[in-house]
Image (cartoon, rainbow, N blue to C red; front, side, top):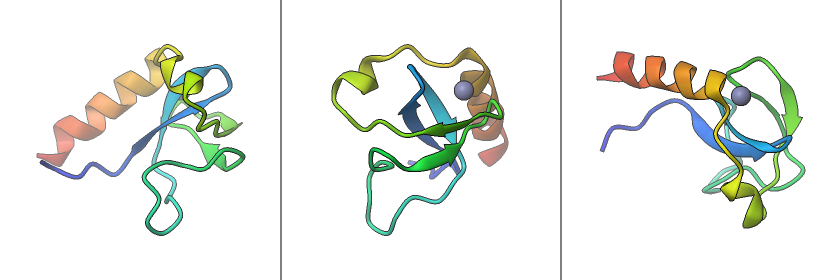
Length: 72
Ligand SMILES: [Zn+2]
C-alpha cells in the first residue's frame, strides 16, 4: 500500500485532510492538535469516535485525490 503524504483528520465538523506531520507513532492527530487542512483552513483536530463519522470535506477530498494520483 502506498503511503500518501496526507492524513485524514476530523476537525471543525467535517473530515478534512492535512499534510501536517503527526506526533511520532500516532495513528491520528490527537484531539486538540492544530492542523492546516488541504482546503486551507486552520482547525483543531477532534479524534473522538463520533468525529470520524462527520462527512468528508469536498475540497479536501478533491485535493487528496490529486495528491494520491500523483503519488503513484
Ligand atoms: Zn477540508
